[in-house]
Length: 532
Image (cartoon, rainbow, N blue to C red; front, side, top):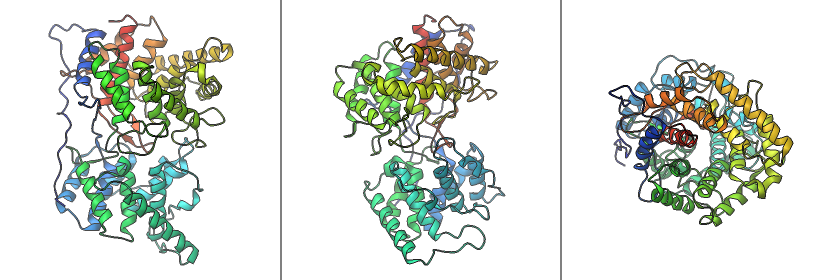
C-alpha cells in the first residue's frame, strides 16, 4: 500500500463575494440565474452531482489511532496529525478528541451530555460517544459503555455494525481505572465469538477497496474492534487503504464518502424551474431512477445498501416534479416503500417501521405522497407534525442543526392538507402562522437567519427561512434577506455556508454544494412570487 495523500476531485476554494461597481442590487432573478449556472456545471455526464464531504475531526482521529495501533503509514499519520492541529473543532466532542490526539490537556466530562438525545435513539448515541471516547483514552472513570443495555431489534446496517463493534470493544477494553478484561463466562465468550464472526462477515461482504456502506465512521469503529482479535489482517489493510484514499484536500477523513443520490435529487428540484437547464435536469432524473433499490427505496449514495425515508421522499418528489408519467414505475415503487415505513401513530421513522418517528422524515413523506391516494396515512402524519410544534412556533431540529430548515420542511408538508379536511386544514394554517411568526422573531439585524435565534446568520438557514416566507407569506417584503444572500454570493455564482446536516446526531458534517442548492430553491420561489 502506498503511503500518500490522494488529491481531491473537488473544485477550488471559494472566491470572494461579487461586488457591484455601482452599488446596485442585481435582483432575485439575476442572483438565481448565476447560482443555477454554477450548480449546473457541477453535474457530471451521468447526471449526478458528486460533491465531496469535508473532512471531520472524529473520523480523522480514529484513523490516526488505527494507524498507530497497526504501525502503518507514518506519512499518513503525520498528515492526519497536521489536519487535527489546523482543523477548527465544531463542538465539544471534536475539541476534546483533537486535544487528546495531539497530547494537549482535555476534559471529556461534558461530552456525554451530547448523548441525551430527544430522538428516541439516546441510548445508541450515548454508546457511540462513549465508544469514541474510550478509543481516544478519554472515557471518564466509572463510565464504561455496555452494548447489552440496548435491547435487540432490527437496525440500520451501520447501526448494526457499530453495535457489534462496540460489543467487541467493550469485552476487550480496559477503559477506566481497574477495569477488568473479558468476562470468563462461557456463554458470554460464545456470544463474543458470534459478534466477532458477524463483524468479519459484514466487512468482507462489501467490495474490497471501498468505504463500507459509504460510512467512514462505522467502518473505523469496526476496524478498531477487528484489531482487538485480528490485528494486521487483510480486512484491516483494505479498510485503511480505502479510508486513506478518501481524504480530501484538507487531509481530513470525512464522515461519509458521498451523498450523490440525496444531493442530485435536491439539486434536480432546484434546477427544474431555472431557465435553460431542461436537458440537464432530465438526465439527472434518469440518474435518480437508475439508483432505485429493489425494495422501492433509495439510499443516500451509490454504494450503500441501506434505503431510507428521507432519500426516497426526495427522489419521489424530484421525479414527480420532472415527469410523473415518464417516471411512473419509480414513483409507484417509492410510494409503496414509504407506505410500508409508516408507524401506527402516524409518524415516519428514518429507516425501519417501528423505530421512533422523525419530524423531517414525516414531513418528507407528506410532501412526497399524494393525498388523494394516501390520505389514510397523511392525516395522522400531519397531526403528528402539528403536535410537535413548540409554544414559540418552532420545532425541534432532527437531522439538521438549523431551526429554519425544519420549519421549512414542516410548513411545506402542511400546505398539502386539502381544504376538504376542514379541521386539519384550520390547524395546519394556525401552525404555519405560528412558524412564520417564529421566523419573523428569529431574523437577524443583517436580514439573515442563523441555526437558532441569536446565532450568527448563515447562508443555509437564511435560504431555508426565505424559502418558507416566499411561499407561505405572499406580499411580505423580503428585500433584506435577498440582500443578505446577494452579499454572500461569490464571483463564480456559488455560496459558502456553515454546515447544518448532522450524522450521527448531533455531529455536523459538511457538503458545501448544499448551500448553492438551497439558495437556488429559495430564489426560485422568490422569482415565482414576483420579486425579481
